[in-house]
Image (cartoon, rainbow, N blue to C red; front, side, top):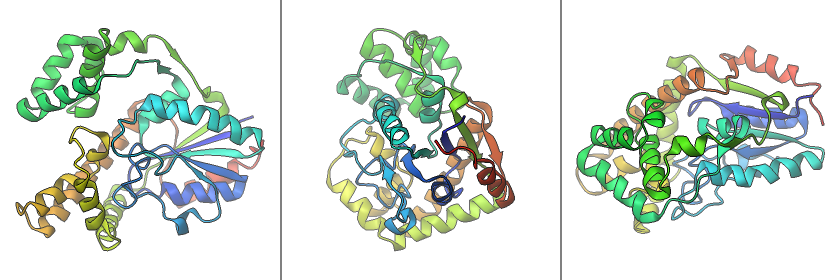
Length: 305
């Protein structure tokens, strides 16, 4: 019997609200599977669900990590593994929700036990990207680990940096570590769905969401993050909107320009997320409209542990 629910999808697709609906139907607890919503400093700019949106349902792994930490897929798996066991042991349903595909793939398909990469290695790689560009980074990655680099489609700086960092920082390529994996949750024990609203609807939500972030205090949140002097290579600094707002605070662009640039970046990010979920394992049930979502909830009726 399936007893774990996984909800994925692009930014602004309604995942948080859908997770609450399922938690109500299954007496569940919601677990974050979004790489930016783990950071305590990014309450608004990561679109972390508000207290009102969480309702009375227990939420785990939201805002529990400081931005100074290089949180990773491996760290998330090490935290989520005992958490899932605990939720199940209490007779509740774990509902994992987020837009980070690598988290779900690690959960269901396994993850390599990769040693921690030294900070100076990650810094040097980030500096190379800033100084020489994405083409140079890809070339370095291909030289160090052609197998892992061949799996990276298009310009994906985060994955390419990971390939370089692991190869240099552990003296073994990422593909070597990936050859030995262990699955936390076998796919037969989980129902996996991907929310896929029509593109025009999704883009409209993204535009409205970013405007709402600013009115809810996004500018002040960005200032607070910048005030901490975090290294630009830290994952927390990858939040969409931070780069644009830094340029605004520096007087390089207007606030309107920063907002429009952030909206464009968010739409491109959503497109990349959809491409990933359509083409990378694990493949889930695509829920396009509200009727699909209702049918999915109804199909979970027999999942109570």
